[in-house]
Image (cartoon, rainbow, N blue to C red; front, top):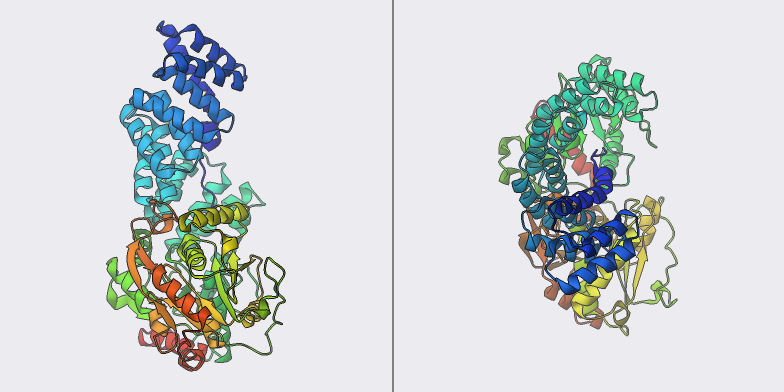
Length: 624
């Protein structure tokens, strides 16, 4: 879902806003010849000369607001964001209520993605211009970036009320209310956007998706059909119509022997949700449970024969709550998880429509209850683990460290498989590696990072490494080597990668289950994990080295800013001193380690038991 905004227009207007500020001062007879010259140079696009002219004025009069304001705009236009920020901050300190300087500062801060500072500047600007729809709209955008969806909805609603004519105001508000879990309000806003601009297919599609979340399948089908007539290439509209047809087919399917089950999930994706959805489908099919599987988009195919529609009493969604769609006449079951101490308010709102929430661990159950979700609608169904499958196992890959030495020659081969997101605490992992290892150690870290096709992955990882080196006061070259792998791997290749290691190590801030770690343990790797969240459901001191952890606010690495998906929420910080001690003891041979977790995991958490537990939950609720 793409958020529409006027960012390009905001960037284009910076010159006009500066020019207007300069013109107002000129009309008042305040401007000096130096500022006039700088303004003319700026208007002519001679930015370097304009910067020099502004600095010449400031050398004589350091507190000249208009010179600082124009200097900031010129610096920003030449790509010198940091210097532009300093100049505009100085301008705002001198004239704290000046709308032009505040506007320009806000633009620079947004461009630098300094969302907390941008929000503060915009709130000041909103006090200066309380009737400005543009300022409220920008506040809504910035609040979304910080993860404060409720505040974003409030500001966008005010923007729409101040300027109700453009459809984009209502469109943006509708999208934020979808993200905030208020589907009824989102549908009203999107209807208004469609009424103002009925030729827009995108708003029609998003209205249809909102209606499906409200369980209004027939109405959604009509909206998707209109969108497809407006734009025959609209894939999302075609997918929406496919889902509508499959939802209708569940209710009209011919009877079958046994109790049918309808499942919807992202089973074609390489995400954790996709993987455990695949495992459940395969296991249930082996149990000959009549099953219809519907992809998150609708028309997905998979290696399994997904079969024809079957009659069912419930649609089981292996998805986050905000992606769950309801089907009239069917109970809504959501199999999901959360990695913090309390779920977001948006999840709580959308979960209201689920007859049952099924989670894999006690920590996830507590997270739902802590946000006020009724405990009588919560169930725990542990996932399974994936032991090594000899038939599917890929070969052990030949890996070399940065100096060309084979990874297989190291005595201690540590592995971590993570998405490159703040929750996985890659910065903490690297800090501990820097503190706990030396180049002479017979140890190597294999770091498999999923980047989600992020084009900025390399730059962001490089920045994280530089900040980590600065925080520890030690370079990566002065620690044991790290081997980075960032391409997508098949299941067989992932199994081969795990066979290349003998320790699996996590420093995560929170997990709903951690499929890679549980698979590694089932394959016989020694386990090092934080003592928190789902880990304590299937690990203990007998089978793993557990790192003490404490509850802390969820923050971005090396920042006081909240991690947006966890806005206002807490997760766990593993004790890095304890983790470094564990690492050092292993490498020096002082720690022989606990008993292997292989038998504990393989015997205690097979997928067959997970499937039986899920079926028992549905049977107890009368939903099969």
